[in-house]
Image 1: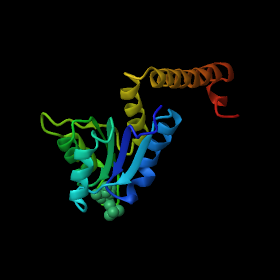
Image 2: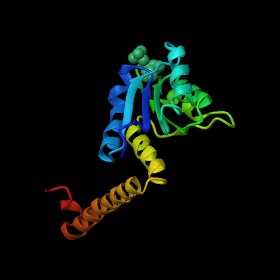
Image 3: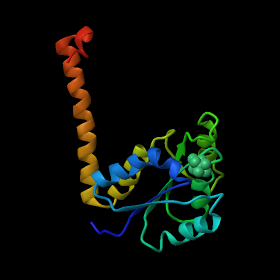
Length: 173
Ligand code: RP5
């Protein structure tokens, strides 16, 4: 796999980093090169414009954008790039209850979609980015298939233990 970043992880503030880090962690597991930085729609609008308009030309294939509160970053970036944008609503210090972040990212107008994951669900954003790449890259596709099999195996082990130990003893281990 080339070391040129394929996924750009951006966030409105470094205060989003704790929530956004799982996207980076899972991309590392799938060996997908990525970059990670802060781009604020409201506080660094020129930087946002440059990042979004230059992303495809630099070789990025997908952008994961996280923000909280009046979370305009994912939608504005989506308006400026032909790349798919995955939005991560962050329950930030300026968010009332998370719904503001969710709705700001989710309720995009026709023509400018943002693939919005659940509140704080940066890990799923990373998995979704990997799945999009894996649809065209056989090596990544196989890693995704193995990951799904692992999820299946983990649940099956729990089912087996629940069956053999009995539900009252399930967590006594
Ligand atoms: C949003 O405001 C950021 O994405 C962050 O979630 C929130 C708070 O930012 P800080 O005040 O912590 O920099 O734009």
